[in-house]
Image (cartoon, rainbow, N blue to C red; front, side, top):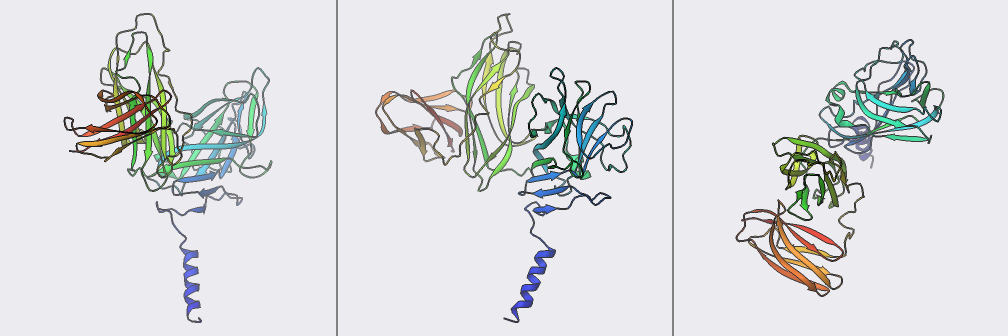
Length: 444
């Protein structure tokens, strides 16, 4: 036992000197930030390998005519055009990380504005960093890329969650410089302001928190599938809309966070979009199922389109994609039936993990992948009219396997792909109240 004690002490000392590291090489837990001359500092807490929660090590208000005026940050408009700034230390985030999302939580201290001129807050990325409130001079700091636009303070609640547009700025330079500077401004009304609690000092209160979600961009086993609801899709000259289903599946052995986005390829070959971009987090085996609606405006040019969805890191890192075609019949004829924008609906309805039943019918294929035969089996909870068909990736119907009245229980149909080329196909079961799509893979 006495011989064991020195080894135990050495082991504990090693843990103290060499704390556990995350998969990306950074240390999880609390991490040091830059310390100000008065001893105050911000904080960094690494929640997971890819999630960081930061508080600022600088939190100031600055005018064009004076140095820092207090230790709060604010959006303040008057004839001096006073702005507030937050400075965050991102030393603990790897320089090669890709930022998927940001959220800025601010605690409201005070706000002023008449009912007709309430404050409206904008948040910018600022190219100024490496400053402190002890050295900055009036008018020195700048506002550059707009990240949050026109948040009205018509009613004052204790906390505000701002979601910066991460695509409005290239964050590479910030990670290399180890600092992110955010600026607040109210440029809409006269003599109105919003004060938020600062990171230290008087008045006391919770500091703002910047949550940053990152990834290293390594390809992950996440798939996305699109299938049109009623192909072929022909949009009239005056515009219209179509419905489609999207399914995203995480096949990784761990939770994955990534971007999902949709683009359209126009008849002239150019691309339009992103029509929508979302940050998605899915646990192991997690599935997102959506029935969505896409509007096509009257001023969209006529011709053949490719409608595509992607998962990965927007815009250049693509892990998986899926697409189908649609057509706009002719030029706008003056009888518009849709708006002047590519409006999309149906994403923000929540999702359920694959382990939680989302529908009362089931559809499976065995074997899958297959060559060239597979059995499609579905389970009906009650008797009724159904349709079972197989589609290719463009949404074209390959074969109708079943249609009509079927009794409740299990039904099985054989699908022969001997006359088809290798690739992804979709089996689609439609009942009187539900629809279910299952991806199958033909490998020859």
